[in-house]
Image 1 (cartoon, helix red, strand yellow):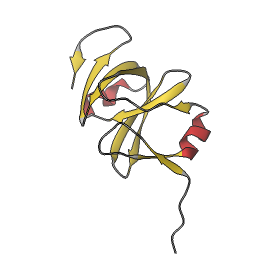
Image 2 (cartoon, one colour):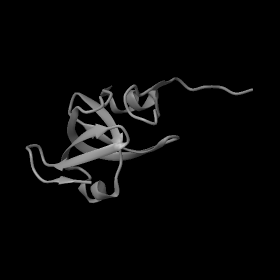
Image 3 (cartoon, rainbow, N blue to C red):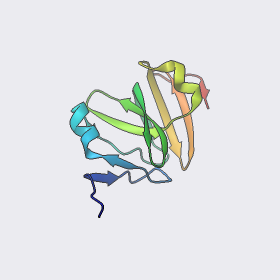
Length: 103
């Protein structure tokens, strides 16, 4: 017999990872799905390993988004980043304003 912990699917990232509701409860922040082609910005708080892969948690102060993690952002923990997700591809921008794109 298997039991399931409350979870929900992220609607716009492929492959679709599962986000435990407990993560929302722990952070006190609302989960915001990263919409394909839309810019997501926030402070890179941590990486999260899910069944579908590793994701970066971007905290914008009100909510958080999960974006596919790339090694290029590893040294940027605690810094402001923005990302544009297009399918499985991610373009990262360092800082709050438009700047050099990496990844």
